[in-house]
Length: 172
Image 1 (tube, rainbow, N blue to C red):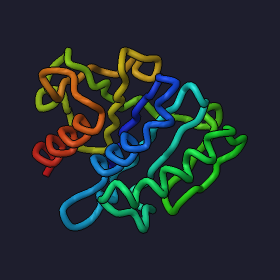
Image 2: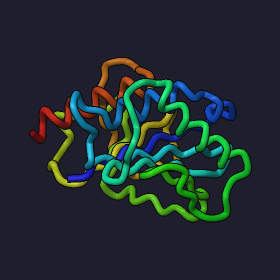
Image 3: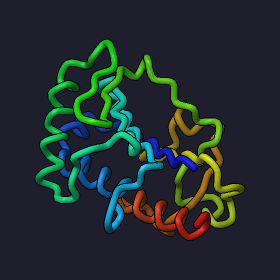
Image 4: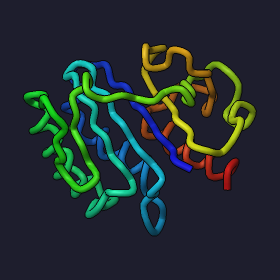
């Protein structure tokens, strides 16, 4: 089972928010003793026209503390300052790709919202699953079923933690 999280950041200044990137990676991947190898985190930066992909099966040498994660984030920012024309590996398991060259498979995706049925009611099977997290209804969420994981809007890193906990609880 693969879990794919697609986080769409539309604000122009979202690239400069290094602590947010570190918290998103921590929330998506870290367990108490290891990282989740079955997770793919894709961060779409529309203002820059890039997708940053973190692939759990290939991630190496990342640590839970924010300071060491900031080194990887700085490499990402350097590459994103002039959007690449091809895929660039900035760290083991971390790719920066032009948005135009990335094909996001969103056919089995759920759009995380505060409206719609709870995840426990909406999740039909525990196979490969995808969740789109965006500040508002977005083109990446077209055709996706809405699902609720929190009663009120939460920061993206908190939502990722809750999603992982709920999927672990529902799917074992």
